[in-house]
Image (cartoon, one colour):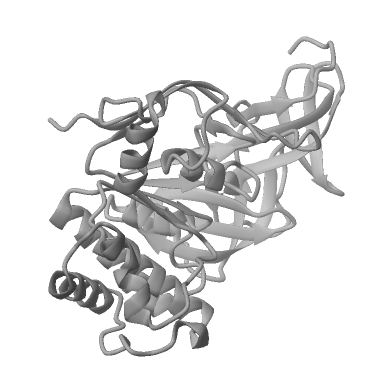
Length: 351
């Protein structure tokens, strides 16, 4: 059984800027060697910061990060070695002057590989990202999507132990993005590299990731950010609610006041075909199916848009039985007890 590529123990990171209140505390994060892990969360959740920590470009203010059983921060030589073994491709990659081949060969040259071996590895990596024959093109003239692919090839050519990707298909058209996903999976299988990537696309995370870590406000949460809502809680003494949009209330049990953030497990969101005029009960909404995708686990990921947007997971059998399809009006319902509060401002009121 493979061990851990990364193991976090009490890690905390806060940016030195006094104006920034963001704190990343990912808890006891463990990433298995050779797995593909997806980081999912809204903007500002901490995905990029976590990737920078995994690449040893940021040092935690507290706690310890083990990389294949070693703490790279104990001495400078170990830090440099870990940075070579954990390669990060950023969302907006920087390319050097010169040609595409110059860029892909750069890291290999720094590591002392001979010219013929460098070129072979670089050309193989370019072929994987569908840029074979682009070796002599100037990097300065590339589009954002092409630059992203060159940066990915540059990282792949290094054969790192950990490949870290910040939204790797964000600037790439949908058809090519699926092929890039296949490349990432192939690299993981061929080389045994541990892959960690961030994405706003829950469907991509489900397709590509062996596991998914959901982040919100610098912490791990159990569910996707797509069912994450914030607002000022109001209570009638028996139950409480927020109103993310005027007229759209999300109810939950207990007495809660102040600003809160809550999530709803997608498997707790029920979808049905609405009878005319029936929208009774708490946490009942009308909407229309805006996305319907399947996974290898025989589940359907259903996004429903309306006054609020929700994601539900249903078995493929239930989708067929209930007659749910793209653009169909549906009724959304979930119990108040399914609402979990993950963040709140202190109000002095017990829940």
